[in-house]
Length: 443
Image (cartoon, rainbow, N blue to C red; front, top):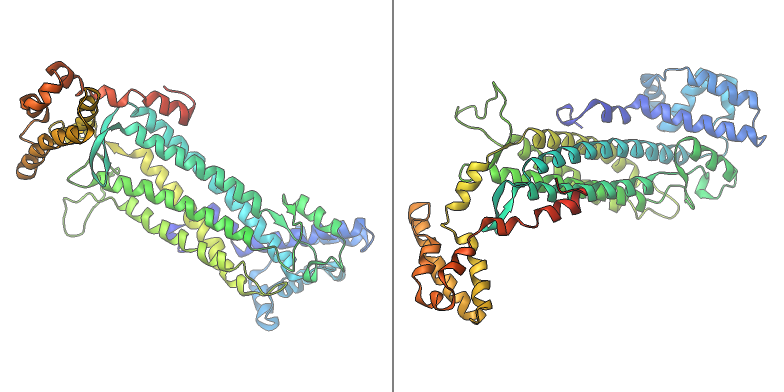
């Protein structure tokens, strides 16, 4: 992952130094279990911890050995023997490389998931704060990008909060699914290592023992993990796209914060572009793209092959680092989002009251007019308003006045009943219910 879209704490999880430290801990915990079982001397296990635990593993030296051995785990074990000395012969007893690699990947993915859950918590907090701030800020809801009926900006943000709460729940479940340890030896039969070792290492590393492994942990677990990251990224993109649309010049109901000294265009000094949310859209595409190869990793040959290995060396760091950055960026966008209630009101009023058309339709049907005739009556008056809007860019014909002049409408509905249907508060009367469902409180 390029540094531009990376944050240090998540990057550190995937560093060579951290990887080799986890490899050592897996091997050392296995030695403890083997010593308890009497397979290796207890003094040897103690020496391995003392010397290896205090060591700084030399990445360059391990790389040098790997250039000769063409095997990364053997290169690490060779370097470890240089540090530990003769007792290093007791390391990796009955284990296979995948025991180390797969268990390490599980540790890295769970640590990454913990960071991503924290990222979501920060985003949820920002969404909740802004949702309550704009709980009653009336804006127009749109379907097909066309004015539909009034809602509030707070409801829009409550929707995002509920969505990201679901994302959090999915991620917690995916973390649990991928948090398994395999120390089962060649083809997963425990022929040369007691199952107790796996249980001991799993507990020590904060994992669960894999119920049945081949020579690798089953990759359906990883496929689900990366699929969930893709869903989270899609939710990031949905909210980012909403903000991008609201920032369009013709709409301008909300806008990314534009800091002092910021420049929007190298050519046009007037520009204030939604660059952060556009960037989030692109990052979401990348995270989603990692889900497919994770799914293709599921179908390995027999008890193992390594076709998954190269894939995971890419997608493990890249997917988690990218999503971590994206969630932090989106939190910043939400936290500093500029919201323009007056613009929302002006935009809603540009269609001359058409947003109340459904209420008139329903009132006519309740007054005894057939739905077909009611629709015809409302639509013919609404189209007059639409046509004036097309010409002037803001309606010059008023929907209410047209309805009051329509004899067929007036025959079914008195003026007072028509005017009653133009109350904005009618559309927001259940906002409290929505907020209670999402946040557990209304105010």
